[in-house]
Amino acid sequence: MSSRSVERIEVRSGHAVMYTSDVQEEVVMQMGVTEARRRFKEVLDRVARGEVIDITRRDTVIAVLGPPISRPPEPLAEALLAWRQDWHVDSWPDDEPFADTRDRSAGRDSPL
Image 1 (cartoon, helix red, strand yellow):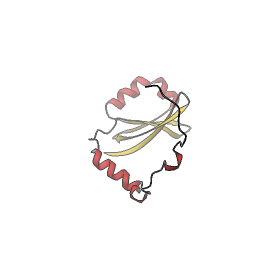
Image 2 (cartoon, rainbow, N blue to C red):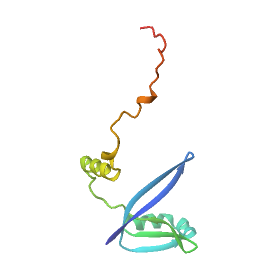
Image 3 (cartoon, rainbow, N blue to C red):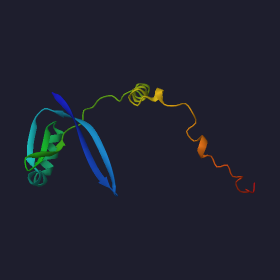
């Protein structure tokens, strides 16, 4: 059994949201959009049984339906360390990034 990452972009209220997930591949079935729409309940039942189904439009895969891979979440400390290494956080300057943006005005009177 192998796995592959699948990306999906969804637009909600004018904002695009991208999802990336891994799906398990046991049996790959391909079907066109029209057929998938017509047999949607059957498609979902097959996915629930562990199958992976590629949805195609003009012989090009445009979507992949499959069960998610269940794996334990990465511990927070390890995820943070990986993020710091990927983004080279140690090379960032240590100065105060907002030092020049402070409001130097006297402000307004506030009744206490």
